Amino acid sequence: MLSILKSVWLVFLHLFRRKITIQYPEEKAYLAPRYRGRIVLTRDPDGGERCVACYLCAVACPVDCIALGATEDEHGRRYPEFFRINFSRCINCGFCEEACPTYAIQLIPDVEMAEYQRQNMVYEKKDLLIDGEGKYHGYNFYRVAGLAIGGKDKGEAEKESPPVDPKSLLP
Amino acid sequence: MSDVVFKLVLIATVLLVILHLAGFLIWVERRLLALLQDRLGPNRAGPLGLFIIVADIIKIFTKEDWIPPFIDKPVFVAAPMIIMVTALLSFAIVPFAPGAVILDLDIGVLLFLGLSSMGIYNVILAGWASNNKYALLGGLRMAAQMFSYEVFMGLSLMGVVTLAGSFNLSAIVHAQREGWFIVPQFLGFLIFFIAALGETHRLPFDMPEAESELIAGYHTEYSSMKFGMFFVGEYISVTLFSALMTTFFFGGWLGPVLPPLAWFCVKTAGFIVVFIVLRAALPRPRYDQLFAFGWKFILPAALLNLVVTGALVLWKSS
Ligand code: SF4
Ligand code: SF4
Image (cartoon, rainbow over all chains, first blue to last red; front, side, top):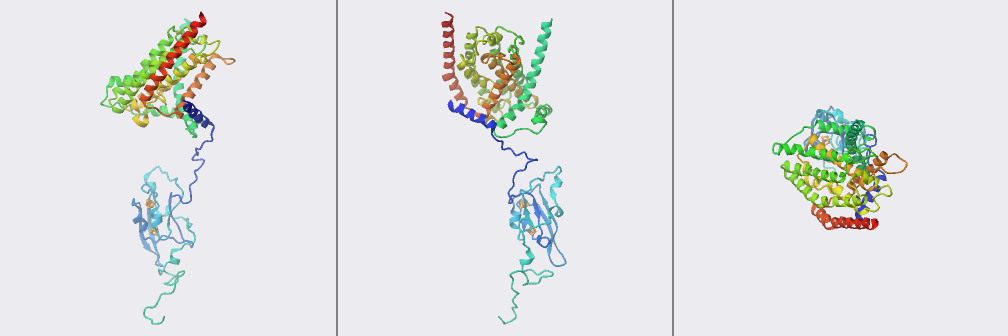
């Protein structure tokens, strides 16, 4: 009986506590930098697209919401001709980010993506591509990869030794 | 003639105020519950979120009023009306201020007890007519609940009646000029309060509704305004019981400085707040626990209270 009165009194005292409500549109809740929200495509430090259109993200995606088509520019660099993410299907799992070998696709802490029309949830490449490097700075896939592209031959990448000539007997 | 006009105006005012108050309580309860849980509650629509009442009313009126095909139609339709009618009728005997009472009945207390017992039918009939197991369980629980508190609700008031020497509510208020009945009848007040919780089936005694176990209990099958009637009826009952506790135990309109009506409103509002705080604080018991509590503990206490009060009154008068 006493405990009932005590709990009523304690609950009553809560009337004067500080309220924990966050008044959303005016006040925003803190989202950690690693929060998995909206997806962006980033660029490398030189301003080129990071994505090499390898389709790994599209394969990794459990709900199949990524669609892209690969093409090559005049330097032999692969890049996506189109890149489409249907955010009405995306479950923000982040698998695409984990699968991506070039840090191109990244999830950022932004969740305000509400739309009135479902078709507007489909983001094209121009909506996804940003000008910055996102969460991973200073990484350029072609500078560390052994692939030969226009302006960079085999063996010219960072920390890469020149290719061995298998026909030569010299060490 | 002017008497009749006065009564008619009074009836209209009371109806208007009570119905609006019931709507207003929707907002009060939501805000207050939220504050008690360290939240802010609905505060967006209009100043302080007051327009949520309007939004709620629009919602309730524009929803489809669906009557399921498998129910007992006349009873199903009649059930929500019962609570509105009985709860509103009971206000006829409440004295709001000196002279401002619709029906100055000499058997006011009895009328109220009768009407409140009638009011319970809304839950039982709704539960029965819905032809749904959850609704039926809700109605069943209400019947059991009624058996546990109706017994001592009347008895708890008999102490007051003995002290005042009348069943007339105005006379009861007048009898409290020397001191409110809360002091000599503290036990009676506690018992009546518990009975009031059971009668209005509010938490902690909301077993017939129990949304965590019975979906929505007796009004599971109700929609639109029929559900709204249960909803509003509950608030009217809460207001009614707050008003009656004020009248029986806290001196009704009596009080210094402020006008009588203001005192009445302040006290009633206080009780409504207590109802809401209790809802936020207490868990719901099992209905057999309430049963045992009512019969083994409260009923003897109520009888004891009556006997002691009677003895004291006799001893004083002799
Ligand atoms: S976050 Fe998950 S669901 Fe969304 S695009 Fe990436 S892999 Fe697909
Ligand atoms: S975003 Fe990454 S994983 Fe997806 S195609 Fe481009 S490079 Fe491959």
